[in-house]
Image (cartoon, rainbow, N blue to C red; front, side, top):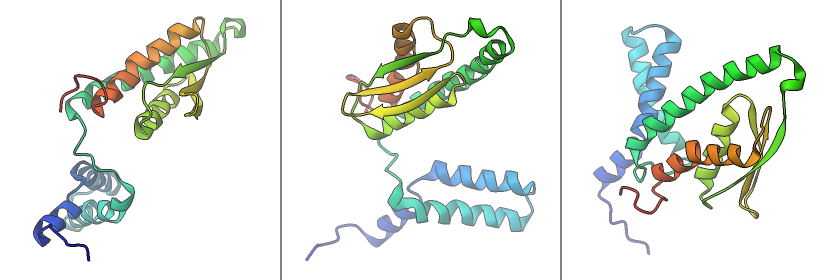
Length: 179
C-alpha cells in the first residue's frame, strides 16, 4: 500500500496555490471583462482565480522550476518584435510585390524539451511575417515560412538567439543557468 508522506495542509495549499500567476491573471482578466470592482465581481474574480487553476492542475506542469527573472526580458523582446514586424509586414504588403522574398527556414532545435520547443514555435508564429509550420522532433528542426528573407542561415540564427536561448535559460537547460 502506498504511504502518503504529505501533510493534509501542505497538500491542500499546493493544490490550491500551485499556479499563483495563473490565478492572478484569471482574476484580473475577469475584473477587466466585467469592467467593475463591485463586491460581487471581486468575489467572482477570487473564486475563478482559485477554482480554475485547481481544475486545470492535472494539465499544467509545475512552474516552480523556472528561472523567472529571464521571463520579463523575453516578453519585452517578443512584444518589441511583434510591433516592429507589424510595421515591416505592412510596408511589404503595401509596397511592390517584387520586394518580397519568401523562404522556408529550417531552424535547428537546441533541446528535446517539448515545452521549450512548443513555446519557441508559438513565439515564431506570433511574430508577423513568420509562421512555424512544423516541429520535426526526429530531425530536431522547426520548419518556418518567412514572408521576406534574404539570408536563411542568418534568420534561423536570429530566431534562435532572440527566442530559443532565453527559453532555454528560463527552463534552466543552458549550462551555467541559475538554479
